[in-house]
Length: 296
Image 1 (tube, rainbow, N blue to C red):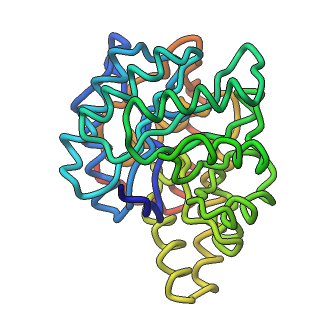
Image 2: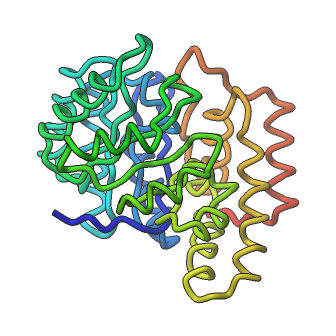
């Protein structure tokens, strides 16, 4: 089992067509844009990809598309988290058959569960795919904090576990997760460089999918020891990340990427809102001020 996952992994958006359905052609173009920019993999159908707003058949099709389009050039980590163990396990099994390189999963959400129930959920889901498995630590959305203590319990019972996406507000536990031998990917792109200094294996977040070249430069500069360049790129990346830190993040992601690569990624799925004309103008001005290159 390949346990090495490191570098820049954009959290993919899920483009929609004018009818609000999955836009397969646009998704393939978003994938190619990022691969051409040098990313190392993708986090698929996660928070940025509107995961909980997609139905299971859409998630299955997305797993097939990313595998087909990537052709082994990068690694895909497919999110299969749902509120129930059975649904998540079925999605995990399908993702493995589709050819993704790993799966990831948020803990059971809505109803608060015991540590034992969370561990058992992960054991069943991970065994359904028997692929490298990532825990998705997103307490601000799931209301479940994956602490180092809980992670140790998961590690003891889930042999497929290789790492986690740590999207919790406090990045201090990254050191502990790394000492546990886990691949810890920071889920806050504003803090990619500090996290790398703490031992993180890379970054998984939505903003790297907007400006992949900036975050690839952080990674490359850090690896080569050019910390001055890494800090400069981190500052640019943080400014882009600040643009989407609001309740309309999906709309900003999709509009920004649409402008960059010259395709229509559609609107976020309701109940999420689209951008107003004034918000679109602000975004356009921001891209001009940041000198963001477009392909259109």
